[in-house]
Image (cartoon, rainbow over all chains, first blue to last red; front, side):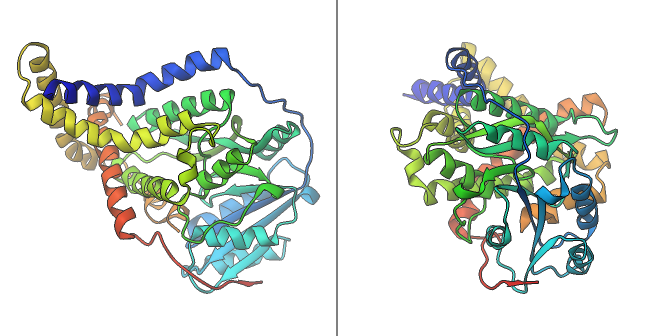
Length: 356
Length: 44
């Protein structure tokens, strides 16, 4: 019995982190579905929800004006969700330059702010972004090109995390993010990605359904609704947005907690996602999203079952687990001693746009 | 950050990210952390 628990737990963890990527590798070889991109200039409404973004608002607006896309085809809308730090005054300067501004005096949350922004949108394509990240100049053009393929309903761009030297981050968080993007690329090649990057994703206007105000993960709910509706939600790494990587895992933990709370909410709000014959990416969703929710419990059962199995291979494995958790326990000392956090990083994952 | 420290932080990051799953479940059940809000918009 104990051995069964041990091996089931180990198999579950191994499947989520290694088996599933291997399955995708094979699956992509057998069922590759290319996206037929064609550069075109559809009208686009770029919607940015902001709460307290005084430090990011001006940079974001300047970035919007620098995009390589015809100004008459790009509507920029900022939906202000009861800011208290002066963001409103900064954004009003840009209203004179044609930026649409929606203001809520009462804090309603990001989903409601996005709904308000979309209500003002006139573009054929809705492009959603967070305040903090910067778009590559060609990002809009790359995203929109994917909509030439009628099967595509939603496109997520690729978020690139940069370190302090401006290179792609190579620490644990950066490596995890690169792994995540590879998974998304393979899922996209097969059919669809179960979720987009909130920093940069676009959808066809006619496919947008207003979000429930309490929604935490708009960037998962919107693409998944589109997939259930019969279109694809793809990932295009050529449409890039940039962010500064946190070098303190504690800050990433804050962001991750919010995302994972949102995943639980996703399954509660949309139980139809768990119907195999109703969800064309059921295997991907279960393996990628639900699997991650099970891993910590598998880790716990793996450790506990290993306590009763201390001979031969199991003993070696147990020593390995002990070492792993001792190193993990030393992590806070290493992390706080690094002293490399910056004010910008604390804005990124602690107080910023992602928390509204 | 020096490469040795980066490697040493991997177990900590892994455990922390998995702990976030448990914390996420707690917040989902209790509705904490300002994830839920409500009401009123005016256009300018």
